[in-house]
Image (cartoon, rainbow, N blue to C red):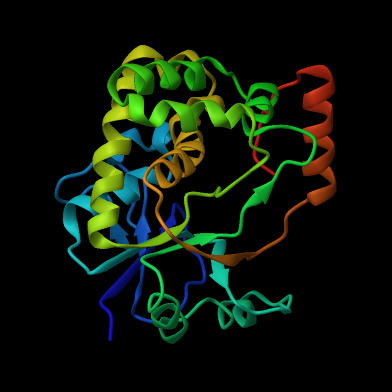
Length: 262
C-alpha cells in the first residue's frame, strides 16, 4: 500500500470525499473564521498571500508540513475521475472521485498523475493568457526563467506555440518529485511578486501568481522529461460553458480581459 495524501483546497464549507487519503485544507485561512478543516496558516506557511497565490498557499503548506510518500492537490469542486458517465447529484458524483485503489493502480506504472490536457483550439497558451489577462507578469516570469533557470527557457517559449496544457494546478506526485517542483516553482513566483506588485490589479487579476503557476507546470514537466499518466477531471456544481467559450472568443477578437471566473 502506498502512503498517499491528497489535499482538497477550499475556501468554503462543501461536500468532501469520504476516503481518508483526502484532506480538506482551508486556504487563505489567516485571519478567517475556521471552517473545521485543516488551516493553511499553521506551521510554516504563506497563508496571507492567498489573495494572490490562490490554492498555492495550500500547496506550500503541504510542502512544508506533510511528509507522505505521495502528495496530491485537487479542488473542492474539481477532482480526478475514471468514470465515463457522471450523475448530476453532487453526493453521487463524489462517489466517482478517483479513489485510493485506483490511484495505487496508476502509480504502479508512473510517479505522476495529471489532468487530461486542456485544449485551446483557436489560440496558443500564451496568446490566450494575453487576451484574457494582463500579460506583463507572464512576460516577466519569462525573464526570470531566462536569467536564473535558463535550461527551462526553451519550454517557456514553447507556450507561444503549444495549444494544450495540464491546467488547474491538479496533480498527484511522488514526494521527491513534488519537493523538486516546489523548490523550483516558489522561488520564481516570489521573485515575480517583487517585480509585479499584485496590488496594482483588481482582486480578480491580482491572482495572477496562481494562474501563471498553471502554465509553468508543463514547463517543468517537459524540461525534465518526466513521465506521467493523464486522468479525466470532473466538476461538482455547474459551469456555464456557453458563457465561458463565448468569453474566450470575445477576448481573442476584442482584447477584453476576463473580470471574473466562470
